[in-house]
Image 1 (spheres, rainbow, N blue to C red):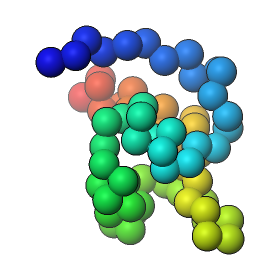
Image 2 (tube, rainbow, N blue to C red):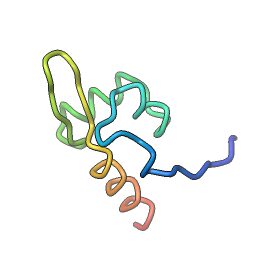
Image 3 (cartoon, one colour):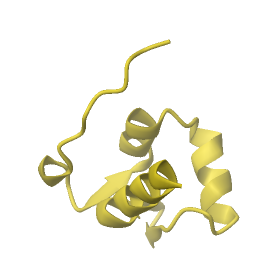
Length: 67
């Protein structure tokens, strides 16, 4: 098992692409798309790109960590 590493959220762009979300969360690409489709992960579509708002992702992650 790998140790969790701290993320300095302020250094990340305000919207994240699927690959950035994958690297931050450890979710698979298919898992991310499935979460977006199910409404579990907030997203924006710009053309063919799927973008995830950084602050909404952070709030979700930190909210689940506190639960």
